[in-house]
Image 1 (cartoon, rainbow, N blue to C red):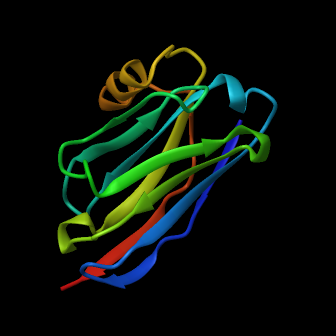
Image 2 (image 1 turned 135 degrees about the vertical axis):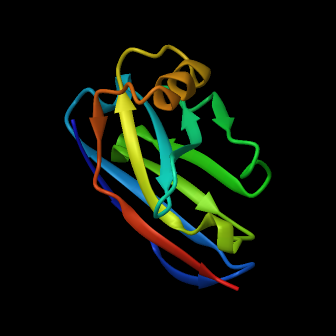
Length: 129
């Protein structure tokens, strides 16, 4: 599976962006997927994860209520809708996928450990105050 993240950009605080993670390969629908972010000089942070069917999701407390992860398996794409963006959301956002985790929670734990099969290149999100 190859992952391609896109949709980042510069936005003012309070604005919105939608990130996309497009995947190639027939195993995408059998993979849990998630997003994490990394700001300069900071640790990687888990953001959100979604199970294979799209029926289960997990969010970091810092984005709960503002971000929504979803997927369209017919299009081999996972989305991250980001609303009410804050300057502290500024980071490079990466998507990751793994066939092993059976739930979004398991994928979240795997991502927090840095354990996943595939990772795409990042997309920069910059939120100005």
